Image (cartoon, rainbow, N blue to C red; front, side):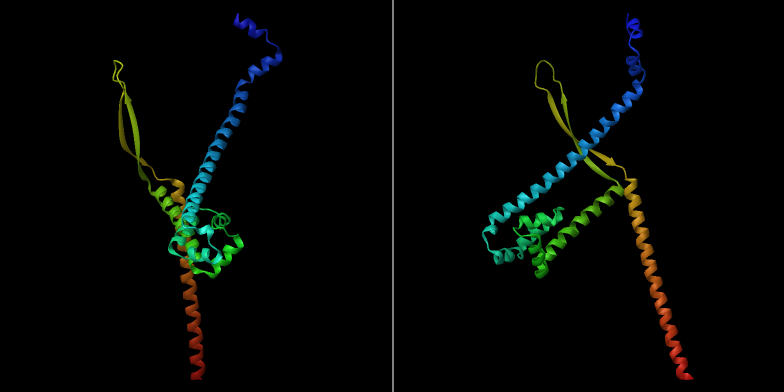
Length: 225
């Protein structure tokens, strides 16, 4: 009965059945793309949530210190203090844009640029924050290149039988993450580039020294003549 129904299908329906493999591929690709897009969107959402949390925490500290009630001179004085510098540095460290940092500090970008130019404390706090961000990226890169160990916590539930409460145990286990080839490749390429630049600098210094000696020898020969 099943085969007779299949044979009696219209030609168009048969073509659809016959091209099932192609149809599956066509439907699977958008699905994979959708999953990838969802993953990226989640990462973006998490990143934005982290930034918002840092900004909220900074604003709370500023509120506690009555920062927003101060006039411009008072704000500048607070930002130049150790507590103010720590807030600026933390904002800059967390990859928050300069525009958002300025907004959190109740200044325009133009005004904050001017304040950073005129006050070394503010400029240095921003610079330290950006530098520490790069240090964290570099440390993470080295960690990926060398491999590392993480501790995973597993919760195991065992049935105790006879209607009793299940037995729940928590176990910590170390798992080794193998070195990342692309991180190793990047670091090696950067090392070679730095070595090449250092070698070029040494050659230029040597060339300049040789030229200087030629000039000095020429002057001595002229004096002897």
